[in-house]
Image (cartoon, rainbow, N blue to C red; front, side, top):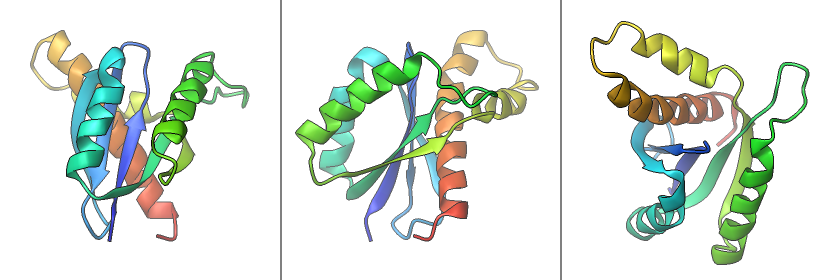
Length: 136
């Protein structure tokens, strides 16, 4: 069975997570600078058997979308053009960064490390949520 890749898209950093081959567990994969996401995505699509990408949907409490959604839609268009056979699904990402931040509060390390791992944890939470509630 193919794996699922999850993307927590941010302006500066993008968190990535991936499932195991039976799509039952999500693992933190990487945090990359947003300007390197296409190259990084190519690397993982080439080396892993991935058929589905989950991308966070940045929804506010009033159900409106954050301005970042425009950039995400452009990114999705690039992926669709470059990899037309990939399945792309969206998932509500409300609270994932806050929950990830909660996990990091008690870690005694520098802020830079926390910022880098925060996105990867957020992507892992998103993917685990998708696994939990989807009929894979």
